[in-house]
Image 1 (cartoon, one colour):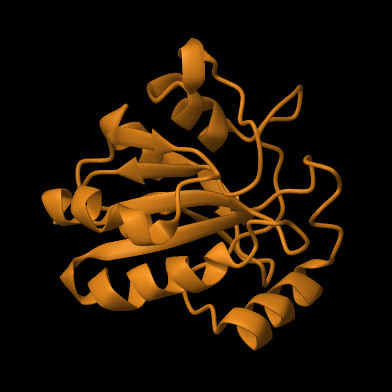
Image 2: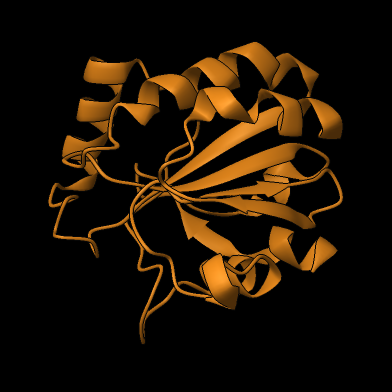
Length: 160
């Protein structure tokens, strides 16, 4: 994997086309998010991680996804407003994508292949699945929805 992660084209919530190369050399936590999920309060913990470690080369990347019980129905503007107003999110948020199925974003194809889930499954099971990526662009670990961001300090510290 490594260098290939940086070439993935993505769209920001504000509609700008970019790629992940702007995060080259940083430790990344890539998360599929949703605004109407039982795990939505994790935005607060994700923002806390970002604030705590960003000066040391860490970034959280949020990718809204509406594939799980239609829990991210909003427009890009609605998602941005919700995240900022309710959780003070300042980490980069991107346009809605698919993480499973025929229209899976290529970034998520790569993440899922590099770090399989329970019993070797590639599929994302739910919102707020987290992928930890090292400074070289290699996926180090996958964490399920039930893993609270507060539990990620040690894995992040090891990579910083």
